[in-house]
Length: 131
Image 1 (cartoon, rainbow, N blue to C red):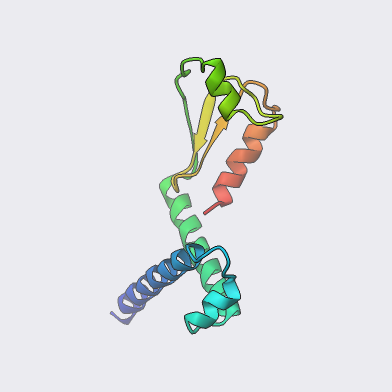
Image 2: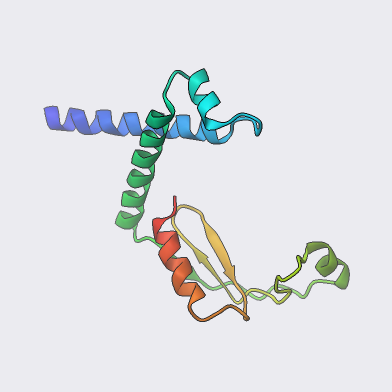
């Protein structure tokens, strides 16, 4: 019974820490992590310890649920020249994506036809380690 109690306590603690991390990540742009920590009564080292533990718990949960998956993306309609002018950045492809990689955590990346052959493999590996 003590073991179940400690598991529940650990889960509650991780949920509280996850909420603190969300709060810190939503802090005002001019406020740094150290100032946020001082304002909330924790040390910067303790914040990063909690961040590490929450990330590890999320990664463990992802690996239990199957991790990343490839999802086919339908080819969207061609953008008008005005759309392309507004949306394109120098050096970016204006072609439609041919695939999309998503992980269980909601991260996604569109794959364009001119991507290097090793890039999808690198993205899948990175998504396996991302929060």
